[in-house]
Image 1: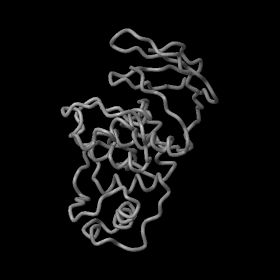
Image 2: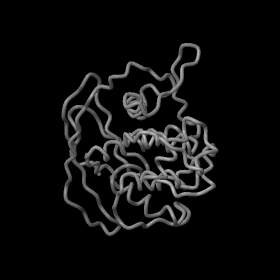
Image 3: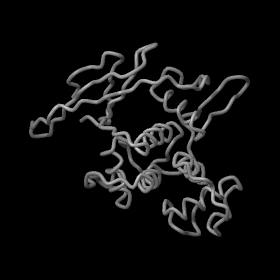
Image 4: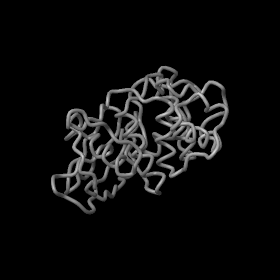
Length: 238
């Protein structure tokens, strides 16, 4: 529950319990807001203050299909970091947020956030991937983000369960104990999903069996980059 609204923007509470801060036009610098939570028994937590530092993206790209949405900032920040950029069609920049992300693409983006250079060798398990992905996949195998297997399936669309597991390993997160039903997360991804939710990185509102889209990936990976950089994201507000 929102306790005190920010002066330089607004906070929107999504259906999945995530608080999304939207800066006001031409505002920058620090601003704060605070929230509290309640449980099913009516118990109320202490008020928590969140400090937000508003920075304007350096990128001049305007993605026509996500302009003015909550996804736009994350997409531009990923472009700035060299993690992912959309495409230009007929002079118009498009992000295509509803398109699925492949397993190979997702791993490459995670390794870019980690500032991990592609491995100089190619694992036999990564040999089936596209040439540009092989070094990233091999590095992910070396770092324990992927398990050695002849079934890496780099061209397959990645599921949300697979994505949260990889990001959880990357962040080496340890959050609350998983309390997920099988309809929300497969058992093997439950703890990873709970960890990322506790860290404010991702809060699944639908089944983790579903395919992850570019829009989903952009939000998750941008928030993961903040946690990786040492920021605390206490933004899951029931």
